[in-house]
Length: 548
Ligand code: GLU
Image 1: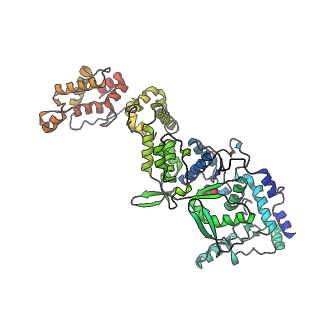
Image 2: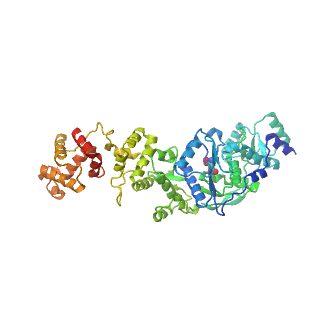
Image 3: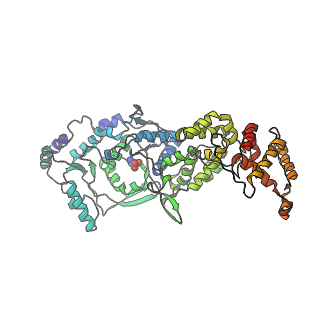
């Protein structure tokens, strides 16, 4: 009776029961092995590679089994919630084609799926219904410990080298008579609601993690808070229980840091008699730092944040590929055998994850990305460069729009061949590697002809342009004319002869082509010079030599 008074005092307006919610959210009507996964970020305003990796696994698991992948906004920690964070997450998911099947977006008023709300702060009544049930059963209680008291307990425990938390004799309000609790609440005393733990730290239970296999944990005996005093919202642990139960999640893919909470979650599911989902605790993501290997850090490593890949302009394929290679050790071998398959066709296995850590290698990503871009069509490279520039470089974007065909011709140099050139690692690099092709950027340039005097080079180039250069020559004729010029000026065309007696010549054919190359681009290395001259066209070529 008293418990009922307490429960109604704390939660006066609740109209539904747990059974009502169970009816409202029935078993999902899916195939036998269908997996229901969720991406459950807290809206902190950024996305870490440690969020992206589980998200990718969630997506693969759901797609492979004709299951459901849903997005749940875990915004119960209102102090950490950042405006626009969910929109950002949505944009990342969209950019990588990882769109969830069920979601709720407040800004656009869009929602899909019948297991919502998918925003935790909108589920308060649901959580409170479950908490009320525990109060009625005497399995939870209001706790009036103040922040100061809690701090003192923690300090004492640290000093005495005891486990931290509210358990045993520290659980001061666990056995407070219900009447007294009612009185204090009526008086307006602040309180949290704690689980009245039944566990025994000296007893062990077995738990099967899909990555780590069977593990043993001591039971939880801490009276963990399940509802916060500030806003009546649940803690992560309690929301995990309620949401993953009612949304029928089959697989929880989450960071290693949650492993230590397993005893708490195990107890919560036991208390309600609910079946636990399966767990995939993903390994830490590591990186090489000089000679040593350490955990990737969002503070120290720019590549820890997903914005890094966007700003650099890595194709989404490359980023997904690079992460999949650290998800499962056999991914790369699979990819070799299935070069054109979509990554979701890969049979993901949690057992093939390393439990000790996944080493993420930026060089590998660069390699994957470079190879990938080299296999794209010129149109695709153009689209990628344009999309990137529209976000990060307006000026280049307008140049690309103005010179579409011209730009595609540049990207096509040595592309349609068995071993295409690998010039671009990511889209932000394209401008830096092609700027000289655009007159807009080819201004106030300086030339370096090495040991040759600029005046002399100018004269040679003028001769070349007026007497030898013909735009309609094919590559062979073009080169034989350069050689003719060499002979006329006593520059060696036979490199072997030149190397034996360099003093017999003024230079070699390499010098002459270099004059042309530097004169037209300022650079000493470029893709195929003949192609460059073809694309620049007669007018630009002539003008650039004249302007030297
Ligand atoms: N909101 C939690 C986080 O961002 C989710 C963990 C989980 O997937 O359960 O870490």
